Length: 232
Image (cartoon, rainbow, N blue to C red; front, side, top):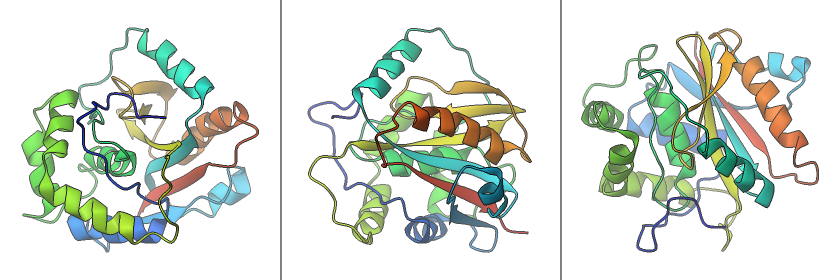
């Protein structure tokens, strides 16, 4: 199923694997300090397994299957008028199979007040360049960004599994901004609020939303959750 907002002429990248080791190398290489942030697998959504995840959690990535039901729900959400905090860093996705990178950009873009990016690094330049852009302008900026395309390709090629001909999964990001839990999905036109949250409850709050999404697709096993945690 084609990613929403892809144009026939749009670029298509190799999909990024849901692998914390690969994502760590990708993020650290682009300017996220290695001694401050690390990605970890979330092995389950019950309380005991969530407690195993290093805290504090800065963002949560969720890989889910694209189904007719998920697309129908997305369409219904698009019909609702939404206003979100201008402090939320959000961008659209126009590059095919770039959802992993867009999800990571959403994560990093919303915790730069917590983590100082390496001066002069790719991330430092990217977020300074796109700070005043709207979500669609950021998408075009990424589409034309050769440095990110190369970095994504290297990370995608490092995966343990061969890229499928047809990609039927998609990444989204959950983050807490101004005491509110936001779902950030480049397939959608704007951030989706899921109510009150806090940095200390972000993982648990995101897990509740993720559990609801999984329950709607009980026959699928194509789910994966990764936490980006701050090292203390």
